[in-house]
Image 1: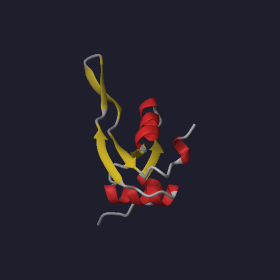
Image 2: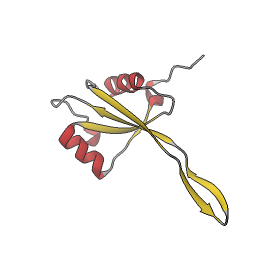
Image 3: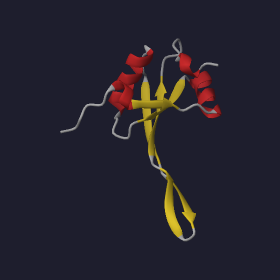
Image 4: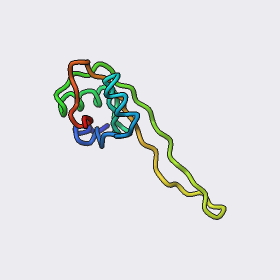
Length: 99
């Protein structure tokens, strides 16, 4: 019953922050926003096929939604999203994160 996700549906965008740049330089870990339905195997396969690198590890976490208050009524600012931290070998790199 579950629909297979396409490669471009699994990885939505790279997360580019100061911390993600430091992780990429020092530990060869790259951060991506991924689909909430994607699992670690699908994420690893998508990164391998899209960026031509080997994947050693994949860590995932669901980032909670951001909520706010406005005049006694709660409203949602940002929905929940899933973050994946992908580790690759030291001799490879993803050019998207290099400056």
